[in-house]
Image: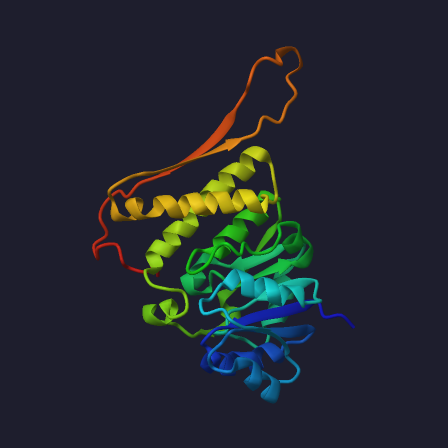
Amino acid sequence: MTARFSIVTTCKGRLHNLKRTLPRFLAQENAEVIVVDYDCPDGTAEYVAANHPRARLVRVADQPLFNLGHARNLGAAQAVGEYLVFLDADVVIADTFLTELDGALGTAAFAVFAPTAGNSLRGSCVIRRREFLAIGGYDELMRGYGGEDLDIYMRLRMIGAPRAMLDPGAVVEMIEQDDAEKARFRGPDLKKQFLQGQLYVAVKEMVMSVERLAVLEPALRQQIYDEVRRNLDPLYAGVGDFALEVRLPDKYKRGFLQEWEFSRAVVVRARRRKPAADGGDASPT
């Protein structure tokens, strides 16, 4: 019998947390559990294979920095459930988590935790496989602390996917990480990483809205990402504003106006309104 839910969790230096959370994942009914060892220095795959053989393993090597989108896509590719349940290794769920989730979903294509859950649970979510595949999964260009969760929620909204809200009460505990732990495998300056990611998402959203696209071509996404990176430093330092223009092809045959050239473009701007109190190096909460 195929499981209705596939719980996908990733681990990069958090085996000490996974030892607490994985048994809860495996105790859920009507679910398979997939653990992605993303070049974890703690020997996650070996531990899981020896102590929890029911969990399915995905092993990734030679990835010194953590790319959550890549890791989740690898786990999702091995999943068989109708719904993909993405839970971080530091989320301790209740025994009734999936029972409550099943009741909350209804006809929704994805579900996120209510805003009252706080920032730490923002990235944990549920996405129906059909919609996950339709939008191309997580955007793997968004490395580091870029907000890949906000990006995938935006793209699900773009295709009109109905959303449900999850009750934070279904989580027993969120094992919090300090800023140093968050940056350990993502690199320094989390706020700057997050700014880069959100500029990229803002440009993507504008292009997708104008072009009415569910998925952007990889070459265009790479172009946008590279342009954001190129313009990031002066913006972050407060010595220049950000303005990125993406020219769009003319989609229409103009018939009687063949000698005329039409062009379209979207422009996204950003600026620092005031200096950060800590000099700009603070990480997002």
